[in-house]
Length: 318
Image (cartoon, rainbow, N blue to C red; front, side, top):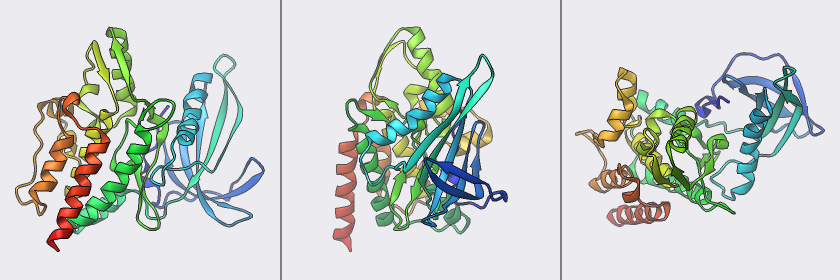
């Protein structure tokens, strides 16, 4: 299954005919295409009765496995209670996927529409003007992201990990609060890897579902016998905070040059720009999360505590 990047969530797409959809008895009029991937797309739609706007994601499923993977996004949303994690308003599965007789099903998911788009959109806009966000604003937004991650890591009955945290998967609400979206890659956080087949399976999953420049080092070459936990997300959070400061993830330039991102990530060299306008405390917070050894990486509670401390320290300077 191919997920859609949420960076396009507010951008004007192609003109779509005035298609209508009926989802569990509610009628929606499609206004425009927001994003499109291999087997899924997202449209901006309006509820015919309430006139409210929604983002409707539709996923084409070619097999029962596809259906189960698609429905996992719904299940994951239901497990998380946080104002900083996306909610599903409604959904309906239509048709029946059967690979033998070559039939498909379509899952329709009704989601909130965020007119401010994603954090990636916002950073891209600022980058064009070299307009760096103030440190205090970065930390407030980052704290909201961390609260969403904490809710994911505290999911019941077992902790979950997002596994694809990136600026394109963080939308901004009307009040500019961060909302973590695209929960299709979310999975059980704590995994015991026992043997080569387990390691290869996880590595293949990471290649398919975790964006390469935000991917934790332990997911590039999974050890044959090891424990993987929710601190894969902490590495990604470090990359997100870096991008909030400098417009790009630390490994974006390596990827754009065509060099090996895996080697760059595993080297542990994080380049803080010499002309950085941010405090040493901010640099330290980024490096605190970007530790190569996952066992030395903090859990989300410690990241939240450090972020709170830094906010209070900044307020004390005012």
